[in-house]
Length: 142
Ligand SMILES: Cc1cc2nc3c(=O)[nH]c(=O)nc-3n(C[C@H](O)[C@H](O)[C@H](O)COP(=O)(O)OP(=O)(O)OC[C@H]3O[C@@H](n4cnc5c(N)ncnc54)[C@H](O)[C@@H]3O)c2cc1C
Image 1 (tube, helix red, strand yellow):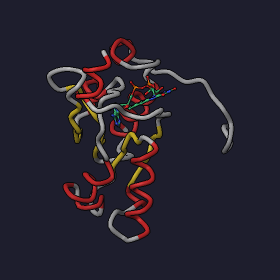
Image 2 (tube, rainbow, N blue to C red):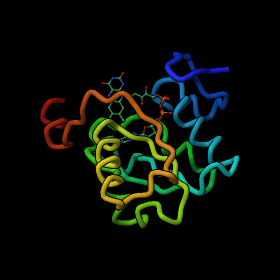
Image 3 (cartoon, helix red, strand yellow):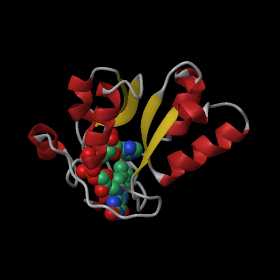
Image 4 (cartoon, rainbow, N blue to C red):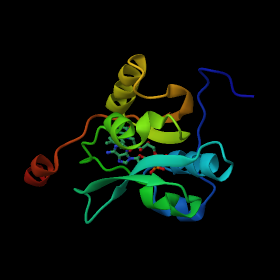
């Protein structure tokens, strides 16, 4: 049994996800499990558009499509909390799993304090994030 505060090593058991994931695919594996087992109605994550500079938010309800959202887009300067409030009704009527950077988590908590998102319907999976870089700056750096 795992207790709060324990550290575990984890990775996906799906070879398809492992191929496209950033670092073992634990995050994508957990999102897929939550969707397949009716723990959530949808997953809000981020997928690659035309290239690594084009981060596209995606609301996935079919577990077969979840691998499309694997991998870390470091030029994805999206604030997912805003999207939940603006386009998904604050998760009032939908149980949602969301991959969150620190800024996304903070935004969600602030909106929840103001009753603009329903935390009870959100399953948050946090990723360590050293910060995002805007596509324009990243292209200059590279
Ligand atoms: C922008 C960003 C910066 C990061 N910086 C660091 C770092 O400095 N040090 C470190 O140790 N780890 C960092 N990570 C975390 C790391 O890259 C892996 O995501 C993490 O280790 C999980 O690995 P995984 O194989 O389980 O992830 P995966 O199974 O590949 O899942 C990654 C998840 O992140 C989501 N995602 C991708 N891009 C974004 C985005 N821009 N905003 C929100 N969600 C996104 C995907 O949709 C997916 O759900 C960062 C992640 C992101 C997204």
